[in-house]
Image (cartoon, rainbow, N blue to C red; front, top):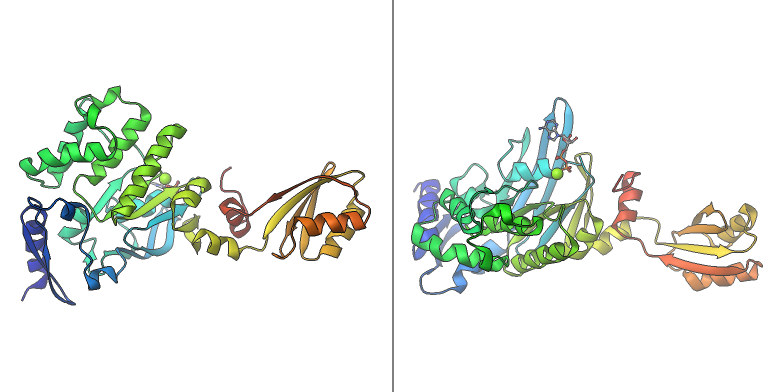
Length: 363
Ligand SMILES: Nc1ncnc2c1ncn2[C@@H]1O[C@H](COP(=O)(O)OP(=O)(O)O)[C@@H](O)[C@H]1O
Ligand SMILES: [Mg+2]
């Protein structure tokens, strides 16, 4: 049997009619999706054993150079269903190039992208599984919100009657239901960003690629976008979220890959990433009559501490996780240093980035 042709034929039917059969190299299974009768089947994929054991998105060794400059230099990771995976790095790190390759807008020089193990970016089904929110807002300003969505829906061959249901539903999900008939040029920046996200959702993809979706929006609109991202993840979508704001990666992403100069320098949960670095915490003390000699003696006594003087303050970077604020203040007092003020900074992704790359996340 010609598996590839069967999968494609079935992929088409599954999207728009009732019953679908999908055939994989691994075996045969039946997916019943009755759009007309059961609402829940639209949003959530059924938990088939062999599908859920595979990552939704797998990236292997992506490479892309521009005139000898390695924009993406061997990037690889995978994302599970329901996971928000962050790609955190400064401008020029290679985030958009990576995401554009996954979205098949760019051809890689090398490497491969797979969905659910068997769907490669060359297959017809791939484009139906991926939703792409580009960094630059990509809307027709003269059309209304609903017309923009309908336009995108037609690109995905969604039949007109299905589209009539999906457009208001999708607008509702990004809080724009009451603005559906307004032309986009009347929208605020935040509303355009939300519509930009809706355009990637109208064909109900499994994977959502979001390239810096909060750039240029106010804090209120940003919080709204966070809500949308979290809701998509709770529906089981696999989300790739790029950002140069460490607060966003910390707040939204279950795992984050730190990317710099086209390479992933570290990947993990927030606590895994923080565990990678030496500086467990930073304690800043203010004291009278601080001298380099007294600080040197203090740090030697504490052990595994580096320091930097700033006027009457000293910044202690502490590598030993057991040394806390009380130890520093007590030791200083024993040595006759009168501490007037003290503050502790726990490490964050900014610290991790700085220590792993030798430069700051933002210039
Ligand atoms: N079309 C292009 N032509 C030449 N260089 C490019 C092009 N697109 C990106 N680059 C370069 O590739 C690197 C990565 O860019 P990009 O992926 O846009 O980074 P990011 O999205 O992290 O800011 C940068 O050095 C950028 O200047
Ligand atoms: Mg970019």
